Every structure is written in structure tokens, then in C-alpha cells.
Image (tube, rainbow, N blue to C red; front, top):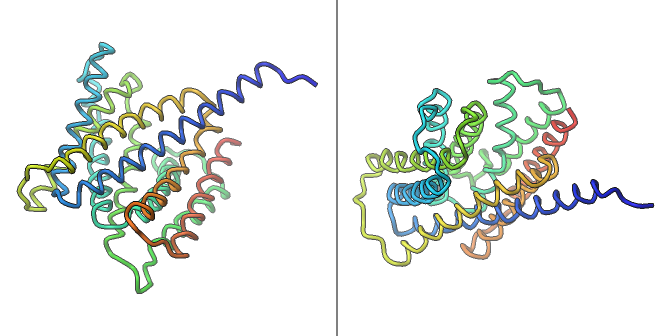
Length: 296
């Protein structure tokens, strides 16, 4: 029995897309680790502003090479303003979570973003969500609570920072769906990172720490975070454009494995049963929601 060439091409495309997705998630996890390392000796506001500036430069150069306008009129549209607001919230609280809480728990909570996006899409855009996916959303949020352990002695109020960051990213993703289709990923990248600069400037007034001259070590961490993050972004775009979305998207959850691994082996963090159980519940709920959505 022979296999259709179209099926072979599709399977190969899905495999390549999955590999690109895993590479992208590994890159984002490494980016998080570099930002966490840089924030040990640098003010969080400065880390945000320097990281945002690096991202703006990278995406601006990319847009210039492609001959794209960096500020088309659509940048000032209402969805883009909403996107910028949530980008500020997401990036600010996520970097604070990286700086003040374990990388492993921050990464685990971040995996709930797709679940909240589906919830938001049902509420904001009126997308149809059946009782099975509503149940999975509820179970996924319970998984987040298990990770947070709000009633346990080991609960840290700082864990809420990761939740706020995750909610910011979910809002950004929802706003991106309403953003004008004419805006390229390069332009979205420029203004997304510009929002990070604004988040850093905003937090500097609260943090009340003077900017310092970064040592070569911290400067290297930030440069590497920008470079690896840009590379991960390119890998993500390749993943989404190579294989079928339904086949490639589940590999987003590989970021959890990389984040947990870096947290344990690089930063010496401990993982308890609650974190492992909650992470498993969040991932399985997200995968089920994705599967049901693809069937619908």
C-alpha cells in the first residue's frame, strides 16, 4: 500500500513546523532566564527599558530591510492602543515575576495564557464555546490555583505577579486578533517592544532606583536576551507558517519543560508535588481545549 505524496509532504511539513515550535519555545525560555539573571544586579525598570530598546532596534532594522513603514496610520487604531496597554501590563508584571519569584513557577503559570485567551474570546468576541471547553477552562484555572497554593503556608503573594503578567499577555493576544491585518509582524514587534520601554519608564517612578552602568556580565545577559528572543520570534513565525496550526500549536507547551529545567539546573529551584500536579492540569486542559476547538 503506497502513501500519497501529498500526505507525505503534509506530515513532513508538520514535523518541520513542530521542530521550529520547540526551538522557539526553547528560545523564549532562555530569554526568560537571561532577563532573570540580568535583574539580579540591575533595577527591574532598567532591564525592561534596555530589553525593549534592543527589541525595537532589531525589529526596526528588519522592517527597514523589507522596506516597510514603521509607523503606518493603523498603529494608532483602537485595537493597537488596547494591545499596547496589555503589553505594558504583561511585560511589566512578567519581568517582575521573573526577578522576584522562581523561574519554574512563573513559566508554569504562563502556560495558562491560551486557556484565558479562549475564555476572553468567548466573552469579548462571542465565540462559541461548548460545555466541554468551559469545563476544561475551569479545570485549567484550578490547576493555576494548585500551583499558587493560596491556602498553604508556602503561598507567596509575589506569585500574583506571574498571574497578572499572564493576564496581560492574554489580553495582548486577544487585542492582536482585532488588530488591522495590514500590520506586519515586524511592525507589531516594533511597537510591542516600544511598549516595554514605556513599562520600564513607568515602573522606574515606582521603583525609585537610579539607573546604573551595567557591568559587562549584565549587559551580555541583556544583549543575549534580545538576540535569542528575536531568534525565537522568527522560529515561531516559521512554525506557524510551515505546518498545520492544529499539529504545531500543541508544541507551545514544550516551553514549560525548558522553563522547569532552567529553573532547577541553572537557578537551583525546587519543584514540589503541587507545582508538578498544577502544571500537568494546566497543560492537559490547554491541549483538550485546543483539540476540541480544532474539531469544532
